[in-house]
Length: 72
Image (tube, rainbow, N blue to C red):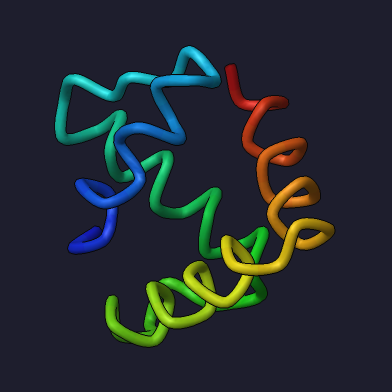
């Protein structure tokens, strides 16, 4: 499912998003995939690559965080 969520734990924690159940993790995974333009059929590594690119660019990171904040 979401091999990259453990890497996002600090970022998600700052937003008050702390998925505890498998269902919550899946919901976060699907939301992130939607935000970065990936489908649920894309491999986890492909999604993580796109997320990493966004985290390294301040403008894209802010956009990602703002979209995730709407989940909280």
